[in-house]
Length: 308
Image 1 (cartoon, rainbow, N blue to C red):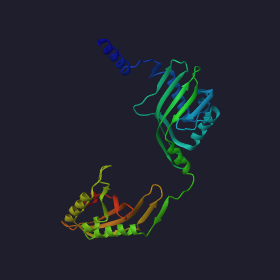
Image 2: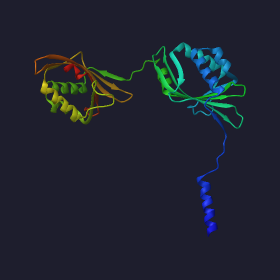
Image 3: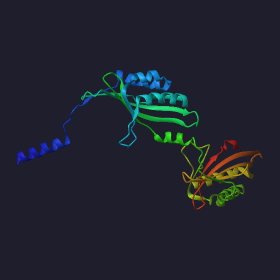
Image 4: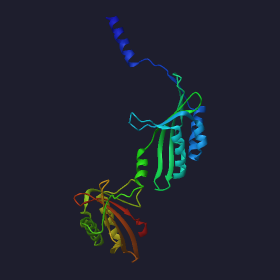
């Protein structure tokens, strides 16, 4: 029985602690890392001669997010030609280490050369479209025995490049109305506020509506009950003389994403009860509307500091 227990214990020990086998060495600092980062900066500078000097003749670059098994990659000539494209089309171009990260050089025991892994932030602005590039980029560089880069595999945010391509062609993304039932909803809500009718004004909102304005820290919002209480508190010190529309409201019905938004501009004319001081408070309001015609959230571009 004792022998069986020992065998069983040894069996579970083998499962819990499998054999480990070292397959190379990882370097935090290495000439291959220096060479890779020098190539990156030559790329940023638009120096095609320097970039070409860092690449092996059989060089290939691949998109790590491309699932096509027949992808041929980008050869040395094509990659070097792209250097000019970046230089000519991207302003404020930079590639730098992601904050808190650093490259690794991995030397595998199979004598395949060095793999350098980088975690960088790539930044720039496309000259023609104004599309901003500011994203993390992860790359794998295979450095051969001749200290030349023979492979690059890039992982980045493909949506940025899609946005850049799309920006070349005008495309409608919905309809703008200057008269619509959803505009009428906002008008009726504002008129109710003008007359101090908090119950009616806030009846146009959903129960879980959120409210923000310029006085609030980013990410914070008021609930319906909080906003209603705040409005009533303001009425104790101020009289609303009128709330006058500036220009006209716009109702935007977007296709992608599916959003319904009323944007409006107003001048709220107020009188302070304590001393008769008159103040005009400019308001820019953005209201999100659901399919039932109820307001789900309000973004107010105004500050109550005007009333102090």
